Amino acid sequence: MTNVTAFGAVKEIGGNKLLLEDKGTKVFLDFGLCFSRMNSFFSPYLRPRSWEYIKDFIALGLLPDLEGLYRQDYESRMRESIEDPLYDGVILSHPHLDHAGFISYLRSDIPIFCSQGSKAILQTFEESSFGFHEYTRLKENFKLRPSKRDSSKLTKDKGSIIPREINIFKPDFKIDDINVHAFPVDHSVPGAHSFVIETSEGAIVYTGDIRFHGRRSNYSDFFVSKAAEYDPILLLTEGTRISESTTYGELDLQRDLFKLSSDVEGLILTNFPIRDTDRMRSFIEVAEAVDRTLVISLRQAYALKTLEENGVKDIPRINEVSIFIPKKGWGVLGNNNYPNDIQLQDYSTWEREFLDYTNSVRAEEIVANPRKYIFRCDFFELKHLFDIKPPEKSVYIRSVTEPIDEEMELDQRRVNEWLKYFNLYPYHQLHCSGHASSGDIKEMINRINPKQVMPIHTEEPLVFSSFHSNILNPELGEKYEIK
Image 1 (cartoon, one colour):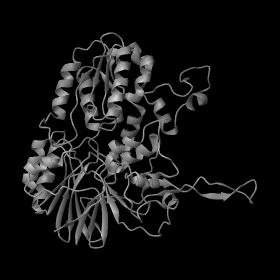
Image 2 (cartoon, rainbow, N blue to C red):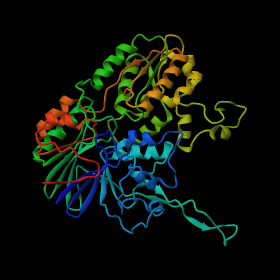
Image 3 (cartoon, rainbow, N blue to C red):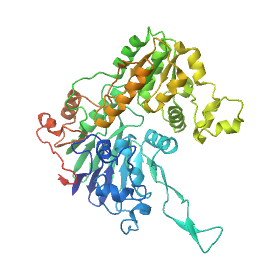
Image 4 (cartoon, rainbow, N blue to C red):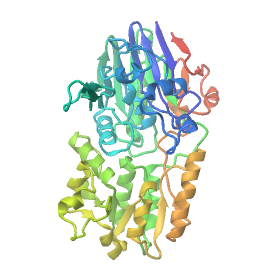
């Protein structure tokens, strides 16, 4: 018997947590958070209780109430945690947090099956981002030990670091008796894959997130061709843009970016997704064509370095860009009144090696020659514009998705105020989606020709009824037998 239960991505975009059960094997397809539901309860000023993450998230419906799934240090605070896991793994399609963000709460002995690119991106989240990010290893909490000063008393223990079982999958791999075939696909982050999963009832196809208008559209086309060969009984497909027909692609964006950048006399500033290396490639090539250099953030530089160290191909290299070194902490970088070791204390360990890179740049260099650079500046880096001092005739190119909820709209209003202050408003909007259009989804369904289609990662699942005669619209937490 084969069952599928959607614990997320039901009538919503993101939050993929799809449980596949085949005979005695239980595997999750992704284990992500849903930003819209999370933001309906929490904000930067109203954070979850760090000592009750799992208990509170279950109560709010953000996590499914399943035993034998969650890390024992947190689960044991709400109920007795069983000794062995009851789930056989998580197959991760890609490292965006709406697909991977809740892995932090899983037991360390539940294996994660992912690509090398996904692992590298998750490492950079752990080491260079704020918040609770424990994807490739976890740190035990709520442990006590005898005090070193007085062994008769107890004190908090820092906890052991426990590595997760991370399995870098090959194109074909097995989880118990389930055969899985992984195919790289076109999406807006390195390491994205779609899957054909052979169960006892037949093949199930899972798209993860996919598009057909990026730099690697041939990857997605190849996946669709191979998936059709398995005569699947079920297609689990994303539908983020199921009502949108545009197929404006990455190369279209690069062409328009070149036109926009060719005659700019001041500094070009931009914001594009921090881990979208294909978008970074577009800006690098345009920068070279207009005799400029793309300047990226320390976090982006660290991501490129980590991806390269993990052997990920088809990504920009560190020597193709400049790396912006902002003032931090006390703001004393370059101030000879302070010893070098004091200056270094303003930076995290992972940041310090970039300070002496030959292609690192500071604000003073950009101010002296703004015509030389394209400066990437996201929401959290707008404060650096006080040091960058964009001159007259500078432009700001917004290369991220339009706001889709109240929180994003509020953030954009704040961005607009900064841009107005620095005479960068109105800005130019130039973006290409990471998700397939309605026409491409319809063609994909026709080519794969599954017996059933289950729409997930979409707010409009009913639209799929015009694409296929047998649509299975899931309800959250309801188990469906597939046969």
